[in-house]
Length: 137
Image (cartoon, rainbow, N blue to C red; front, side, top):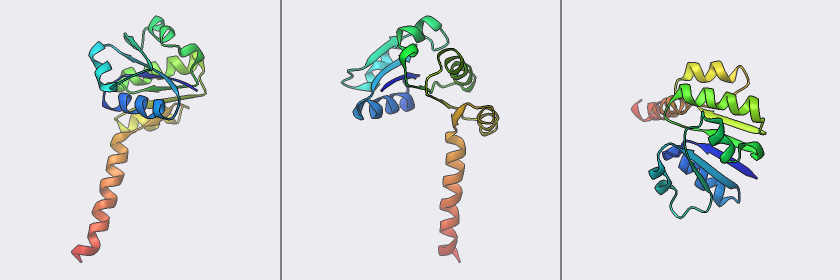
């Protein structure tokens, strides 16, 4: 299986390393060549550039990718790049990180797979507080 990860920060590099450990062929894209250091002893691909650049996506192997993860530090970038990948290259799975819960829901309703860490944190923190309620009473 082949995956392209757009954004090699904490999240993107973590996903890339996990997929690589599971036997995936992974190529990361990041504007900062220094982001390669986050991958440690990396045997996958790495392309320096912006995920909105079609030439960069092609060099990363998007045309033959089974999956794409878009996890840059910007919701707008993630949504646009995710939609471009989904519409132009049609990999089986495109997942986009969106920090704003309303925007994540909006795009999910339109067929884009979104992950919203903000919503996950709200739900988890609320559950933990509720679990503390018993010890307070």
